[in-house]
Image (cartoon, rainbow, N blue to C red; front, side, top):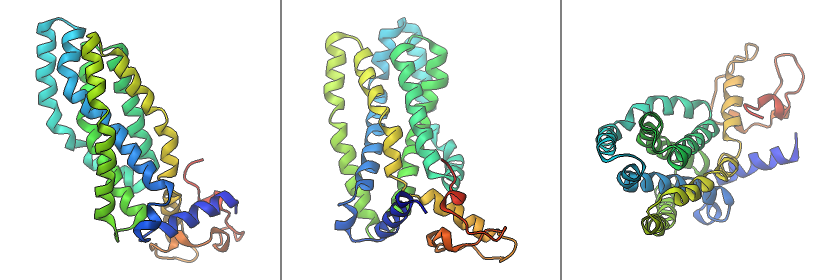
Length: 257
């Protein structure tokens, strides 16, 4: 078993229902808070400024029509929740990265193609309507998965404080855009802030996806007929025999490389 893999599994177990001081002294909490904070900053910025962005990007009649369409689509983000729940049951990391990709897509459209109505409707409007559900569902799930439920409410409150702190950037960004009558540069800044999130997410999972897969494989092993349990994912993979009789290495249980 690789030392780095062992370290990740050890960290994940030690943070589960750990004292609040222990959780707050490790990077995963801050990475999780920063991840959601950047996404919510971007979404709030779009909702607050979409009228002005469309007015600047196209003629008044077309902008008014698109604003009406956006208002009609915004409440229906909940339709993605069943799909999000399924993805979370398979891979939390995948949900994190899907949210990041969606953030890049609508950021690129707003930055470079905001005058194209079809892109606004089918990329920006759909993404903004659904992303909040995806982001918050992922964070709620991962907070319990990674830190347990001993301090669940307190941790969510602290994450919201991080979100509120980062959201203070929205005011200066809006003022900047209004002062130059152009949202290009604020959108570039928000787009750039999304890029590090593709790396940050690897500090927010700590091998929990691997534990899910190990649990499923243990439960479906035809020889031992084991019933999957929460503790199965915590077993040392080197102590679990594979169906072929050889020791299963940690890489055998990996979902993604």
